[in-house]
Image (tube, rainbow, N blue to C red; front, side, top):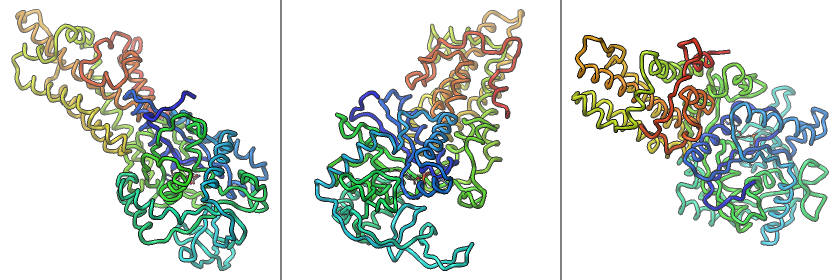
Length: 546
Ligand code: ME8
Protein backbone atom coordinates (compact mmCIF):
# COMPACT_ATOMS: atom_id res chain seq x y z
CA UNK A 1 0.00 0.00 0.00
CA UNK A 2 1.34 3.40 -0.88
CA UNK A 3 1.68 5.68 2.16
CA UNK A 4 -1.18 8.08 2.75
CA UNK A 5 -0.75 11.78 3.36
CA UNK A 6 -2.85 14.29 5.25
CA UNK A 7 -4.51 15.47 2.05
CA UNK A 8 -5.63 12.00 0.98
CA UNK A 9 -9.42 11.85 0.75
CA UNK A 10 -10.27 8.84 2.86
CA UNK A 11 -13.79 7.37 2.61
CA UNK A 12 -15.04 4.39 4.63
CA UNK A 13 -18.09 2.15 4.76
CA UNK A 14 -19.05 0.28 7.92
CA UNK A 15 -17.49 -3.14 8.14
CA UNK A 16 -20.26 -5.69 7.90
CA UNK A 17 -21.07 -8.52 10.28
CA UNK A 18 -20.47 -11.90 8.75
CA UNK A 19 -23.41 -13.58 10.44
CA UNK A 20 -25.25 -13.85 7.12
CA UNK A 21 -24.62 -13.19 3.44
CA UNK A 22 -24.69 -9.60 2.12
CA UNK A 23 -27.96 -7.92 1.14
CA UNK A 24 -29.01 -4.80 -0.71
CA UNK A 25 -28.42 -2.53 2.30
CA UNK A 26 -24.76 -3.46 2.44
CA UNK A 27 -24.41 -2.89 -1.28
CA UNK A 28 -26.03 0.53 -0.87
CA UNK A 29 -23.41 1.66 1.67
CA UNK A 30 -20.65 0.31 -0.55
CA UNK A 31 -21.99 2.02 -3.67
CA UNK A 32 -22.49 5.42 -2.06
CA UNK A 33 -18.91 5.38 -0.82
CA UNK A 34 -17.60 3.99 -4.10
CA UNK A 35 -19.29 6.73 -6.15
CA UNK A 36 -17.80 9.42 -3.93
CA UNK A 37 -14.37 7.83 -4.11
CA UNK A 38 -14.48 7.39 -7.89
CA UNK A 39 -15.61 11.00 -8.23
CA UNK A 40 -12.63 12.25 -6.21
CA UNK A 41 -10.34 10.08 -8.31
CA UNK A 42 -11.87 11.43 -11.50
CA UNK A 43 -11.02 14.85 -10.09
CA UNK A 44 -7.41 13.67 -9.76
CA UNK A 45 -7.42 13.77 -5.97
CA UNK A 46 -5.38 11.37 -3.91
CA UNK A 47 -7.95 8.94 -2.49
CA UNK A 48 -8.25 5.96 -0.19
CA UNK A 49 -11.39 3.87 0.20
CA UNK A 50 -12.02 0.99 2.56
CA UNK A 51 -14.74 -1.51 3.24
CA UNK A 52 -14.66 -4.91 4.90
CA UNK A 53 -16.05 -7.33 7.44
CA UNK A 54 -16.58 -7.26 11.20
CA UNK A 55 -15.87 -10.80 12.26
CA UNK A 56 -15.71 -11.05 16.04
CA UNK A 57 -18.36 -10.99 18.74
CA UNK A 58 -21.16 -13.07 20.13
CA UNK A 59 -23.40 -12.64 17.13
CA UNK A 60 -20.87 -14.21 14.76
CA UNK A 61 -19.82 -16.78 17.36
CA UNK A 62 -23.45 -17.89 17.72
CA UNK A 63 -23.99 -17.99 13.94
CA UNK A 64 -20.87 -20.15 13.48
CA UNK A 65 -21.98 -22.42 16.31
CA UNK A 66 -25.44 -22.80 14.80
CA UNK A 67 -23.85 -23.76 11.48
CA UNK A 68 -21.50 -26.11 13.31
CA UNK A 69 -18.47 -24.57 11.60
CA UNK A 70 -15.22 -23.32 13.07
CA UNK A 71 -15.65 -19.52 13.47
CA UNK A 72 -12.63 -18.56 11.36
CA UNK A 73 -13.74 -20.84 8.55
CA UNK A 74 -17.27 -19.50 8.90
CA UNK A 75 -15.90 -15.94 8.57
CA UNK A 76 -13.67 -16.86 5.62
CA UNK A 77 -16.68 -18.13 3.71
CA UNK A 78 -18.83 -15.09 4.36
CA UNK A 79 -16.05 -12.53 3.92
CA UNK A 80 -15.55 -14.09 0.48
CA UNK A 81 -19.23 -13.35 -0.29
CA UNK A 82 -18.80 -9.68 0.60
CA UNK A 83 -15.69 -9.53 -1.57
CA UNK A 84 -17.59 -11.17 -4.39
CA UNK A 85 -20.30 -8.54 -4.03
CA UNK A 86 -17.66 -5.84 -4.38
CA UNK A 87 -16.31 -7.44 -7.55
CA UNK A 88 -19.75 -7.99 -9.07
CA UNK A 89 -20.88 -4.50 -8.08
CA UNK A 90 -17.86 -2.60 -9.45
CA UNK A 91 -16.86 -1.45 -5.97
CA UNK A 92 -13.25 -0.37 -6.28
CA UNK A 93 -11.86 -0.32 -2.76
CA UNK A 94 -8.22 0.13 -1.79
CA UNK A 95 -8.43 -2.16 1.18
CA UNK A 96 -10.93 -4.80 2.19
CA UNK A 97 -10.26 -5.06 5.90
CA UNK A 98 -11.19 -8.06 7.98
CA UNK A 99 -11.03 -7.75 11.74
CA UNK A 100 -9.29 -11.12 11.79
CA UNK A 101 -6.37 -9.63 9.81
CA UNK A 102 -3.11 -9.77 11.80
CA UNK A 103 -2.37 -6.04 11.43
CA UNK A 104 -5.81 -5.29 12.90
CA UNK A 105 -5.02 -7.41 15.98
CA UNK A 106 -1.83 -5.40 16.39
CA UNK A 107 -3.66 -2.08 15.96
CA UNK A 108 -6.36 -2.99 18.50
CA UNK A 109 -3.74 -4.11 21.01
CA UNK A 110 -1.82 -0.91 20.61
CA UNK A 111 -4.93 1.24 20.84
CA UNK A 112 -6.07 -0.54 24.02
CA UNK A 113 -2.67 -0.06 25.61
CA UNK A 114 -2.61 3.66 24.80
CA UNK A 115 -6.11 4.26 26.16
CA UNK A 116 -5.26 2.22 29.23
CA UNK A 117 -2.03 4.16 29.77
CA UNK A 118 -4.02 7.39 29.48
CA UNK A 119 -6.14 6.10 32.35
CA UNK A 120 -9.44 5.72 30.56
CA UNK A 121 -9.81 1.99 31.21
CA UNK A 122 -10.61 0.41 34.58
CA UNK A 123 -12.01 -2.88 35.87
CA UNK A 124 -15.38 -3.17 37.55
CA UNK A 125 -18.55 -5.21 37.95
CA UNK A 126 -20.98 -4.86 35.12
CA UNK A 127 -24.64 -5.76 35.23
CA UNK A 128 -27.10 -4.97 32.53
CA UNK A 129 -29.34 -5.99 29.65
CA UNK A 130 -27.42 -7.20 26.60
CA UNK A 131 -28.68 -7.73 23.07
CA UNK A 132 -26.55 -10.16 21.09
CA UNK A 133 -28.24 -9.16 17.86
CA UNK A 134 -27.33 -5.49 18.38
CA UNK A 135 -24.10 -6.32 20.25
CA UNK A 136 -24.92 -3.67 22.83
CA UNK A 137 -26.07 -3.12 26.41
CA UNK A 138 -29.29 -1.23 27.02
CA UNK A 139 -30.20 0.91 30.02
CA UNK A 140 -33.20 -0.08 32.17
CA UNK A 141 -35.15 2.82 30.62
CA UNK A 142 -34.53 1.55 27.08
CA UNK A 143 -36.08 -1.90 27.49
CA UNK A 144 -39.60 -3.21 27.93
CA UNK A 145 -41.45 -6.45 28.48
CA UNK A 146 -42.77 -8.40 25.53
CA UNK A 147 -43.91 -11.92 24.60
CA UNK A 148 -41.88 -14.37 22.56
CA UNK A 149 -43.95 -15.08 19.43
CA UNK A 150 -42.81 -18.70 19.26
CA UNK A 151 -42.85 -19.83 22.90
CA UNK A 152 -45.36 -17.39 24.39
CA UNK A 153 -42.87 -16.71 27.19
CA UNK A 154 -42.34 -13.28 28.69
CA UNK A 155 -39.11 -11.71 27.43
CA UNK A 156 -37.40 -8.34 27.69
CA UNK A 157 -36.69 -6.44 24.47
CA UNK A 158 -34.99 -3.22 23.37
CA UNK A 159 -37.54 -0.45 22.76
CA UNK A 160 -35.45 0.84 19.86
CA UNK A 161 -34.75 -2.34 17.89
CA UNK A 162 -37.17 -4.89 19.43
CA UNK A 163 -34.31 -7.34 19.79
CA UNK A 164 -34.28 -9.66 22.81
CA UNK A 165 -32.10 -8.60 25.74
CA UNK A 166 -30.69 -10.86 28.45
CA UNK A 167 -29.52 -9.87 31.90
CA UNK A 168 -25.77 -10.28 32.37
CA UNK A 169 -23.58 -9.63 35.36
CA UNK A 170 -19.82 -10.06 35.26
CA UNK A 171 -16.47 -8.38 35.91
CA UNK A 172 -15.44 -6.41 32.84
CA UNK A 173 -13.11 -3.66 31.76
CA UNK A 174 -14.78 -0.28 31.43
CA UNK A 175 -14.09 2.70 29.22
CA UNK A 176 -14.54 6.08 30.92
CA UNK A 177 -17.09 7.35 28.43
CA UNK A 178 -18.55 9.67 31.05
CA UNK A 179 -15.33 11.70 31.04
CA UNK A 180 -16.03 12.89 27.50
CA UNK A 181 -19.57 14.26 27.69
CA UNK A 182 -18.59 17.94 27.82
CA UNK A 183 -15.75 17.63 25.35
CA UNK A 184 -17.93 15.86 22.79
CA UNK A 185 -20.70 18.39 23.11
CA UNK A 186 -18.26 21.23 22.74
CA UNK A 187 -16.71 19.61 19.68
CA UNK A 188 -20.12 19.23 18.05
CA UNK A 189 -21.08 22.83 18.83
CA UNK A 190 -17.86 24.01 17.23
CA UNK A 191 -18.26 21.69 14.25
CA UNK A 192 -21.90 21.76 13.19
CA UNK A 193 -21.09 19.97 9.93
CA UNK A 194 -19.48 17.02 11.66
CA UNK A 195 -22.61 14.89 11.47
CA UNK A 196 -24.73 14.97 8.30
CA UNK A 197 -27.64 15.21 7.56
CA UNK A 198 -28.56 17.84 10.10
CA UNK A 199 -31.37 15.88 11.75
CA UNK A 200 -28.86 13.34 13.04
CA UNK A 201 -26.57 16.09 14.31
CA UNK A 202 -29.51 17.52 16.25
CA UNK A 203 -30.31 14.08 17.62
CA UNK A 204 -26.78 13.50 18.93
CA UNK A 205 -26.49 17.00 20.39
CA UNK A 206 -29.80 16.46 22.15
CA UNK A 207 -28.60 13.11 23.52
CA UNK A 208 -25.47 14.73 24.90
CA UNK A 209 -27.43 17.61 26.40
CA UNK A 210 -30.13 15.56 28.03
CA UNK A 211 -28.66 12.15 28.89
CA UNK A 212 -25.74 11.44 31.10
CA UNK A 213 -23.13 9.25 29.44
CA UNK A 214 -22.33 6.20 31.51
CA UNK A 215 -19.07 4.29 31.32
CA UNK A 216 -19.00 1.54 28.74
CA UNK A 217 -18.17 -2.08 29.32
CA UNK A 218 -15.53 -2.92 26.70
CA UNK A 219 -14.75 -6.56 27.42
CA UNK A 220 -16.54 -9.85 28.02
CA UNK A 221 -15.52 -12.92 30.00
CA UNK A 222 -13.67 -15.35 27.73
CA UNK A 223 -15.93 -18.10 29.06
CA UNK A 224 -18.88 -16.31 27.42
CA UNK A 225 -17.14 -14.85 24.39
CA UNK A 226 -14.36 -16.94 22.87
CA UNK A 227 -14.46 -15.39 19.44
CA UNK A 228 -12.76 -12.06 20.07
CA UNK A 229 -9.38 -10.40 20.52
CA UNK A 230 -7.96 -11.12 24.00
CA UNK A 231 -7.55 -8.14 26.32
CA UNK A 232 -3.81 -7.36 26.46
CA UNK A 233 -2.29 -9.11 29.49
CA UNK A 234 -5.58 -10.66 30.59
CA UNK A 235 -6.56 -13.79 28.73
CA UNK A 236 -9.69 -14.20 30.86
CA UNK A 237 -11.37 -11.37 28.92
CA UNK A 238 -12.09 -10.68 25.24
CA UNK A 239 -12.41 -7.20 23.79
CA UNK A 240 -15.99 -6.01 23.13
CA UNK A 241 -16.68 -6.23 19.40
CA UNK A 242 -17.28 -2.49 18.90
CA UNK A 243 -14.03 -1.53 20.66
CA UNK A 244 -12.37 -3.81 18.11
CA UNK A 245 -14.45 -3.01 15.01
CA UNK A 246 -14.24 0.79 15.05
CA UNK A 247 -10.45 0.62 15.12
CA UNK A 248 -10.57 -0.88 11.61
CA UNK A 249 -10.59 2.66 10.28
CA UNK A 250 -7.18 3.23 11.85
CA UNK A 251 -5.73 -0.17 10.95
CA UNK A 252 -6.38 0.48 7.27
CA UNK A 253 -4.39 3.69 7.47
CA UNK A 254 -1.39 1.89 8.89
CA UNK A 255 -1.93 2.72 12.58
CA UNK A 256 0.14 2.76 14.74
CA UNK A 257 3.21 3.07 12.52
CA UNK A 258 2.00 5.28 9.65
CA UNK A 259 3.70 8.65 9.37
CA UNK A 260 0.59 10.51 8.23
CA UNK A 261 -3.00 9.53 8.77
CA UNK A 262 -5.71 11.53 6.96
CA UNK A 263 -9.00 12.11 8.78
CA UNK A 264 -11.60 9.76 7.33
CA UNK A 265 -15.10 10.55 6.13
CA UNK A 266 -17.30 7.81 7.52
CA UNK A 267 -20.47 6.72 5.78
CA UNK A 268 -22.79 4.64 7.95
CA UNK A 269 -26.40 3.52 8.15
CA UNK A 270 -28.76 5.13 10.64
CA UNK A 271 -28.68 2.04 12.86
CA UNK A 272 -25.13 2.65 14.08
CA UNK A 273 -25.08 6.37 14.81
CA UNK A 274 -24.42 6.12 18.54
CA UNK A 275 -21.35 3.99 17.95
CA UNK A 276 -19.86 6.37 15.38
CA UNK A 277 -20.96 9.73 16.75
CA UNK A 278 -20.48 9.18 20.49
CA UNK A 279 -18.35 6.12 21.25
CA UNK A 280 -15.87 6.43 18.40
CA UNK A 281 -15.07 10.14 18.89
CA UNK A 282 -14.65 9.46 22.61
CA UNK A 283 -12.30 6.51 21.95
CA UNK A 284 -10.24 8.70 19.65
CA UNK A 285 -10.04 11.52 22.20
CA UNK A 286 -8.97 9.00 24.83
CA UNK A 287 -6.19 7.76 22.56
CA UNK A 288 -5.09 11.33 21.79
CA UNK A 289 -6.01 10.96 18.12
CA UNK A 290 -7.77 13.29 15.70
CA UNK A 291 -11.51 13.28 15.12
CA UNK A 292 -12.83 11.89 11.83
CA UNK A 293 -13.50 14.55 9.22
CA UNK A 294 -17.24 13.93 9.02
CA UNK A 295 -19.82 11.24 9.59
CA UNK A 296 -22.52 10.87 6.94
CA UNK A 297 -25.60 8.85 7.76
CA UNK A 298 -27.90 7.19 5.29
CA UNK A 299 -31.36 5.68 5.65
CA UNK A 300 -32.42 2.11 5.10
CA UNK A 301 -33.77 0.28 2.10
CA UNK A 302 -37.13 -1.23 2.71
CA UNK A 303 -39.07 -3.69 0.60
CA UNK A 304 -42.78 -3.20 0.22
CA UNK A 305 -42.50 -0.44 2.83
CA UNK A 306 -41.11 -2.82 5.48
CA UNK A 307 -37.63 -3.33 6.83
CA UNK A 308 -35.90 -6.17 5.01
CA UNK A 309 -35.80 -9.21 7.20
CA UNK A 310 -34.86 -12.79 6.54
CA UNK A 311 -37.78 -14.14 8.54
CA UNK A 312 -40.25 -12.13 6.44
CA UNK A 313 -38.46 -13.25 3.32
CA UNK A 314 -38.27 -9.73 1.89
CA UNK A 315 -34.49 -9.50 1.50
CA UNK A 316 -33.12 -8.32 -1.84
CA UNK A 317 -29.93 -10.07 -2.90
CA UNK A 318 -27.74 -7.62 -4.87
CA UNK A 319 -25.69 -10.36 -6.53
CA UNK A 320 -28.83 -12.00 -7.83
CA UNK A 321 -30.23 -8.65 -9.08
CA UNK A 322 -26.93 -7.79 -10.77
CA UNK A 323 -27.02 -11.17 -12.45
CA UNK A 324 -30.51 -10.62 -13.84
CA UNK A 325 -29.88 -7.05 -15.01
CA UNK A 326 -26.35 -5.79 -14.50
CA UNK A 327 -24.58 -4.15 -11.58
CA UNK A 328 -24.68 -0.67 -13.10
CA UNK A 329 -28.48 -0.74 -13.42
CA UNK A 330 -28.73 -1.47 -9.72
CA UNK A 331 -26.15 1.19 -8.87
CA UNK A 332 -27.99 3.73 -10.99
CA UNK A 333 -31.32 2.86 -9.38
CA UNK A 334 -30.04 3.10 -5.82
CA UNK A 335 -28.17 6.34 -6.42
CA UNK A 336 -31.06 7.96 -8.31
CA UNK A 337 -33.44 7.25 -5.46
CA UNK A 338 -31.01 7.75 -2.61
CA UNK A 339 -31.98 10.56 -0.27
CA UNK A 340 -29.78 10.35 2.81
CA UNK A 341 -32.27 11.29 5.47
CA UNK A 342 -35.11 9.10 4.28
CA UNK A 343 -35.56 5.39 3.72
CA UNK A 344 -35.77 3.98 0.20
CA UNK A 345 -38.17 1.35 -1.07
CA UNK A 346 -36.71 -1.30 -3.34
CA UNK A 347 -38.96 -1.83 -6.29
CA UNK A 348 -37.89 -3.74 -9.35
CA UNK A 349 -40.38 -2.05 -11.63
CA UNK A 350 -38.81 1.31 -10.88
CA UNK A 351 -35.38 -0.12 -11.50
CA UNK A 352 -36.51 -1.32 -14.90
CA UNK A 353 -38.15 2.00 -15.76
CA UNK A 354 -35.03 3.94 -14.83
CA UNK A 355 -32.91 1.61 -16.89
CA UNK A 356 -35.13 2.15 -19.93
CA UNK A 357 -35.03 5.88 -19.30
CA UNK A 358 -31.24 5.79 -19.35
CA UNK A 359 -31.19 3.78 -22.56
CA UNK A 360 -33.77 6.06 -24.18
CA UNK A 361 -32.07 9.24 -23.11
CA UNK A 362 -28.43 8.54 -23.65
CA UNK A 363 -28.10 5.49 -25.86
CA UNK A 364 -30.63 6.79 -28.33
CA UNK A 365 -28.88 10.10 -28.32
CA UNK A 366 -25.71 8.28 -29.20
CA UNK A 367 -27.42 6.32 -31.91
CA UNK A 368 -28.93 9.47 -33.39
CA UNK A 369 -25.62 11.32 -33.38
CA UNK A 370 -23.73 8.43 -34.89
CA UNK A 371 -26.09 8.01 -37.80
CA UNK A 372 -24.28 7.13 -41.02
CA UNK A 373 -25.71 10.28 -42.58
CA UNK A 374 -23.45 12.43 -40.46
CA UNK A 375 -19.74 13.05 -40.79
CA UNK A 376 -18.43 12.96 -37.27
CA UNK A 377 -14.79 13.13 -38.20
CA UNK A 378 -15.37 16.12 -40.42
CA UNK A 379 -17.24 17.88 -37.61
CA UNK A 380 -14.49 17.21 -35.10
CA UNK A 381 -11.81 18.31 -37.54
CA UNK A 382 -13.54 21.63 -38.08
CA UNK A 383 -13.40 22.27 -34.37
CA UNK A 384 -9.67 21.59 -34.36
CA UNK A 385 -9.14 24.61 -36.54
CA UNK A 386 -11.76 27.02 -35.31
CA UNK A 387 -13.76 27.64 -32.14
CA UNK A 388 -17.41 26.73 -31.82
CA UNK A 389 -18.29 30.38 -31.34
CA UNK A 390 -16.47 31.54 -34.42
CA UNK A 391 -17.92 28.73 -36.54
CA UNK A 392 -21.41 29.55 -35.31
CA UNK A 393 -21.06 33.20 -36.16
CA UNK A 394 -20.53 32.27 -39.82
CA UNK A 395 -24.08 31.03 -40.09
CA UNK A 396 -25.82 34.24 -39.23
CA UNK A 397 -28.57 32.42 -37.36
CA UNK A 398 -28.70 34.06 -33.90
CA UNK A 399 -31.30 31.64 -32.51
CA UNK A 400 -29.27 28.61 -33.51
CA UNK A 401 -26.13 30.17 -32.10
CA UNK A 402 -27.95 30.87 -28.85
CA UNK A 403 -29.15 27.25 -28.55
CA UNK A 404 -25.66 25.84 -28.97
CA UNK A 405 -24.17 28.37 -26.60
CA UNK A 406 -26.74 27.56 -23.94
CA UNK A 407 -26.09 23.81 -24.22
CA UNK A 408 -22.36 24.39 -24.05
CA UNK A 409 -22.74 26.53 -20.95
CA UNK A 410 -24.98 24.01 -19.18
CA UNK A 411 -22.78 21.05 -20.00
CA UNK A 412 -19.60 22.84 -18.97
CA UNK A 413 -21.13 23.89 -15.64
CA UNK A 414 -22.19 20.36 -14.77
CA UNK A 415 -18.91 19.23 -13.24
CA UNK A 416 -18.91 22.18 -10.85
CA UNK A 417 -22.63 21.89 -10.14
CA UNK A 418 -22.48 18.27 -9.07
CA UNK A 419 -19.23 18.36 -7.13
CA UNK A 420 -20.72 19.24 -3.74
CA UNK A 421 -23.65 16.91 -4.32
CA UNK A 422 -21.42 13.93 -4.83
CA UNK A 423 -18.88 14.67 -2.11
CA UNK A 424 -21.78 15.10 0.33
CA UNK A 425 -23.49 11.89 -0.86
CA UNK A 426 -26.46 13.72 -2.40
CA UNK A 427 -26.34 11.41 -5.38
CA UNK A 428 -29.96 11.85 -6.47
CA UNK A 429 -29.34 15.57 -6.94
CA UNK A 430 -26.25 15.03 -9.07
CA UNK A 431 -28.00 12.44 -11.22
CA UNK A 432 -31.10 14.50 -11.77
CA UNK A 433 -28.91 17.41 -12.92
CA UNK A 434 -27.10 15.14 -15.37
CA UNK A 435 -30.30 13.51 -16.61
CA UNK A 436 -32.00 16.86 -17.11
CA UNK A 437 -29.52 17.74 -19.89
CA UNK A 438 -30.76 14.95 -22.17
CA UNK A 439 -33.97 16.64 -23.41
CA UNK A 440 -32.00 19.76 -24.19
CA UNK A 441 -29.53 17.85 -26.34
CA UNK A 442 -32.19 15.70 -27.96
CA UNK A 443 -34.05 18.95 -28.62
CA UNK A 444 -31.28 19.95 -31.03
CA UNK A 445 -32.30 17.11 -33.33
CA UNK A 446 -35.98 17.88 -33.04
CA UNK A 447 -35.60 21.61 -33.62
CA UNK A 448 -32.99 21.60 -36.38
CA UNK A 449 -33.50 18.21 -38.02
CA UNK A 450 -29.91 17.79 -39.19
CA UNK A 451 -30.91 14.91 -41.52
CA UNK A 452 -32.76 17.45 -43.68
CA UNK A 453 -29.55 19.38 -44.26
CA UNK A 454 -28.56 17.30 -47.26
CA UNK A 455 -26.46 19.02 -49.86
CA UNK A 456 -27.92 18.92 -53.35
CA UNK A 457 -25.91 19.50 -56.50
CA UNK A 458 -28.30 22.31 -57.42
CA UNK A 459 -27.44 24.20 -54.19
CA UNK A 460 -25.38 27.34 -54.46
CA UNK A 461 -21.82 27.02 -53.09
CA UNK A 462 -22.72 29.23 -50.15
CA UNK A 463 -25.70 27.10 -49.25
CA UNK A 464 -23.69 23.93 -49.50
CA UNK A 465 -21.18 25.23 -47.01
CA UNK A 466 -23.86 26.56 -44.63
CA UNK A 467 -25.74 23.28 -44.66
CA UNK A 468 -22.70 21.11 -43.93
CA UNK A 469 -21.44 23.53 -41.31
CA UNK A 470 -24.78 23.59 -39.53
CA UNK A 471 -25.05 19.83 -39.61
CA UNK A 472 -21.52 19.46 -38.27
CA UNK A 473 -22.18 21.90 -35.43
CA UNK A 474 -25.32 20.08 -34.35
CA UNK A 475 -23.65 16.69 -34.44
CA UNK A 476 -20.57 17.94 -32.69
CA UNK A 477 -22.56 19.60 -29.90
CA UNK A 478 -24.72 16.53 -29.34
CA UNK A 479 -21.90 14.05 -29.45
CA UNK A 480 -19.50 16.10 -27.40
CA UNK A 481 -22.17 16.73 -24.74
CA UNK A 482 -22.65 13.00 -24.60
CA UNK A 483 -18.91 12.44 -24.22
CA UNK A 484 -18.81 14.87 -21.28
CA UNK A 485 -21.87 13.29 -19.66
CA UNK A 486 -20.40 9.82 -19.97
CA UNK A 487 -17.21 10.98 -18.25
CA UNK A 488 -19.27 12.49 -15.42
CA UNK A 489 -21.35 9.34 -15.11
CA UNK A 490 -18.32 7.09 -14.66
CA UNK A 491 -18.50 7.10 -10.83
CA UNK A 492 -22.13 5.96 -10.96
CA UNK A 493 -22.10 3.49 -13.83
CA UNK A 494 -18.47 2.65 -14.52
CA UNK A 495 -19.22 -0.21 -16.91
CA UNK A 496 -21.79 1.61 -19.05
CA UNK A 497 -19.59 4.67 -19.13
CA UNK A 498 -16.56 2.70 -20.29
CA UNK A 499 -18.57 0.76 -22.83
CA UNK A 500 -20.06 3.86 -24.44
CA UNK A 501 -16.85 5.88 -24.30
CA UNK A 502 -15.13 2.93 -25.98
CA UNK A 503 -17.79 3.07 -28.70
CA UNK A 504 -16.97 6.74 -29.18
CA UNK A 505 -13.29 5.81 -29.32
CA UNK A 506 -12.41 8.19 -26.51
CA UNK A 507 -8.81 7.72 -25.41
CA UNK A 508 -8.61 6.08 -21.94
CA UNK A 509 -6.30 8.86 -20.77
CA UNK A 510 -8.86 11.46 -21.72
CA UNK A 511 -11.62 10.37 -19.38
CA UNK A 512 -10.78 12.67 -16.48
CA UNK A 513 -12.43 15.83 -15.23
CA UNK A 514 -10.11 18.05 -17.33
CA UNK A 515 -11.77 16.70 -20.44
CA UNK A 516 -15.31 17.06 -19.13
CA UNK A 517 -15.98 20.21 -21.13
CA UNK A 518 -17.24 20.75 -24.65
CA UNK A 519 -14.36 20.90 -27.10
CA UNK A 520 -11.68 19.74 -24.65
CA UNK A 521 -11.09 16.53 -26.57
CA UNK A 522 -11.31 16.50 -30.36
CA UNK A 523 -9.37 13.32 -30.96
CA UNK A 524 -12.09 10.68 -30.63
CA UNK A 525 -14.78 9.45 -32.98
CA UNK A 526 -12.55 7.86 -35.57
CA UNK A 527 -14.48 4.99 -37.21
CA UNK A 528 -15.41 1.62 -35.73
CA UNK A 529 -18.29 3.16 -33.82
CA UNK A 530 -20.73 0.77 -35.37
CA UNK A 531 -20.56 -2.93 -35.16
CA UNK A 532 -19.32 -4.20 -38.49
CA UNK A 533 -22.12 -4.43 -40.95
CA UNK A 534 -24.67 -3.12 -38.50
CA UNK A 535 -26.15 0.28 -37.86
CA UNK A 536 -27.06 -0.52 -34.26
CA UNK A 537 -24.50 0.40 -31.63
CA UNK A 538 -23.43 -2.65 -29.73
CA UNK A 539 -24.20 -0.88 -26.48
CA UNK A 540 -27.89 -0.92 -27.24
CA UNK A 541 -27.78 -4.69 -27.56
CA UNK A 542 -25.64 -5.22 -24.49
CA UNK A 543 -27.98 -3.15 -22.40
CA UNK A 544 -31.03 -5.22 -23.09
CA UNK A 545 -32.05 -7.58 -20.31
CA UNK A 546 -30.29 -10.92 -20.27
O1 ME8 B 1 -23.60 -2.83 12.19
N1 ME8 B 1 -30.60 -0.39 4.19
O2 ME8 B 1 -22.75 -4.37 10.70
P1 ME8 B 1 -24.06 -4.80 9.87
C1 ME8 B 1 -29.47 0.31 4.04
N2 ME8 B 1 -20.56 -4.51 12.02
N3 ME8 B 1 -28.32 -0.01 4.64
C2 ME8 B 1 -28.31 -1.09 5.43
C3 ME8 B 1 -29.45 -1.87 5.64
C4 ME8 B 1 -30.65 -1.50 4.96
N4 ME8 B 1 -31.77 -2.18 5.04
N5 ME8 B 1 -29.12 -2.86 6.47
C5 ME8 B 1 -27.80 -2.69 6.75
C6 ME8 B 1 -22.70 -3.51 11.76
N6 ME8 B 1 -27.31 -1.63 6.11
C7 ME8 B 1 -21.32 -3.38 12.34
C8 ME8 B 1 -20.67 -2.11 11.83
S1 ME8 B 1 -18.58 -0.46 11.69
C9 ME8 B 1 -17.20 -0.21 12.56
C10 ME8 B 1 -19.30 -1.87 12.37
C11 ME8 B 1 -25.91 -1.13 6.10
O3 ME8 B 1 -23.68 -5.98 9.07
C12 ME8 B 1 -25.75 0.18 6.85
O4 ME8 B 1 -24.59 0.85 6.41
O5 ME8 B 1 -25.23 -4.88 10.75
C13 ME8 B 1 -25.51 -0.29 8.24
O6 ME8 B 1 -24.95 0.69 9.03
C14 ME8 B 1 -24.62 -1.46 7.99
O7 ME8 B 1 -25.11 -2.06 6.79
C15 ME8 B 1 -24.68 -2.43 9.18
O8 ME8 B 1 -24.20 -3.63 8.82
